[in-house]
Amino acid sequence: MSVVQRAADPEVDAIGLSFRDGDETALAEAYRRWSPMIYRVALRSLGTAADAEDVTQLVFVAAWRGRSGFDPSRAALPGWLIGITRNTVADAHERRTRDRKVADAATALATQPRPQHDMGRVVDHVLLADEIERLGEPPRTLLRLAFYEDLTHDAIAERTGIPLGTVKSHIRRSLLRLRTRLEVDDATR
Image 1 (cartoon, rainbow, N blue to C red):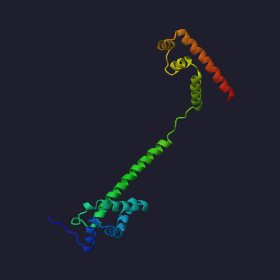
Image 2 (image 1 turned 135 degrees about the horizontal axis):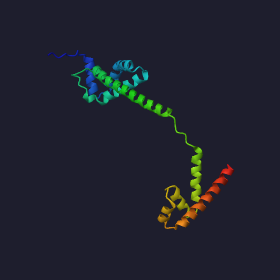
Image 3 (image 1 turned 60 degrees about the vertical axis):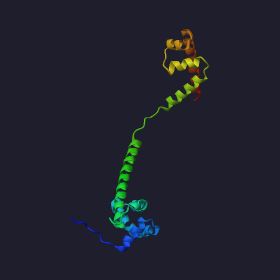
């Protein structure tokens, strides 16, 4: 089995070695020489200049950060940069797919019919709660137990220790007081 040797270009090899060793002028030279090639590859795949520019920048950032992994004996710097470009372009396509799915889900959610809340019921509920708060004790507690905890008069009497007849009287008087207050409020609207 024969190993294919790459054609050596002393100038490209020198840039590659300097790049791997962290020479910032080699980075600038690599960008000047090969960013147009990377841009064209990205543009062909992604179709927009903005995405191609982003990929070009990402490729050089990734290459610079990962330069210790560059082996000039295995590949020339432009070939290594193309490998990074392919991965970066694939990542951009995946990101587009994810973004599209999120946008589709958001659109679907936004176009779903929303339940219409009966604002009148909400206002009435708030007013009723406010009026119950204005009652003194023990009527306030007795009404809360009756309406919010759905207890019977017997259960309220047992829980509070108040005689059953007194519980019934307090609840009846409190309901009449609430009805009167709410009717007055309705008349003023």
